[in-house]
Amino acid sequence: MLPALDLVIVHHSQPAHAVETVARFLDQSVPVRIVVVDNGSSGDDVELVRKGIPPQVVLLEQGANLGFGPAANVGFRWFLDHGPAPWLGVAPHDARPAPDCVEVLLAEMARRPRSGLASADVGDGVTPVVDRYFGAIPERARVRHGWEPAGYPHGTLMVARRECLEDVGLFDERYFAYCEEADLALRARARGWQVGVVRGAEVRNATVGSHVAVVDYLQLRNTLLLARDHFGRYAATVRTVVALLDLVTGLVKPDRRGPYWDVRARLLALRDFVLRRFGPPPASVTSRQ
Image 1 (tube, rainbow, N blue to C red):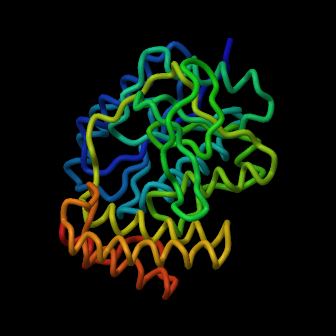
Image 2: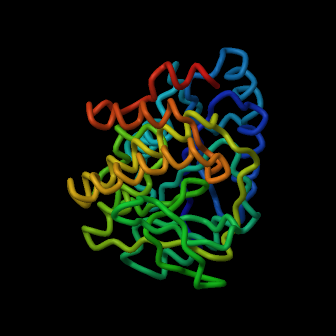
């Protein structure tokens, strides 16, 4: 029988989604122990979560929006201090796992002694990879079922082997959100751990969480940070030039803009990367939500 999964659910201002996500993970075909980390929700929302989850689920209130990676770290540290479980996972408050998702995912990881990080299958037909200039990007999936090597695990449901986290550390909290999984995976792979996606371990996101400006800001700033830290100044410089060209192209040809495109957010991301301002996005970006 597979051991239990210790799971961190990161919640912010969506109590109904959080309660349903907790219920779905508790209904998995293998045991799941859960800690919900609340990222600065209102008192009413926190109370709805508290009333909606079973008593064995731990609720850790943070009083502020720490970001996805830092909030996950809060839960990881709690579990690391409360028992020797071999598997630790993280999911957002709107994750919707299939009933056998955790069992399938853990079984594939258990067959590989050096599998350090893996994610469930979101059903989009792509594999997450890391490009030295463009950061975390998708490629067409090559495997229909079972383990597929990947550049990084996505955060809709990520599972880590305890020994891997003890070896390489937790999420780098400078990222706040976006690209922190890629950074963790690059550190893990450098230490000889395998990273993959498990096809057949199905999970979905119920919502799209953040505002366009916040996503655009964090993706650009954090991609530049990832490129500089793991691939050097040259890679970060190339990515900066590409970002400037994309900005000009988007201004001249609006039909060339991607789904997340905000002029001010991109300029602030470039500024903050140069000034080495990381962590939460600035108020001038978050206030536009």
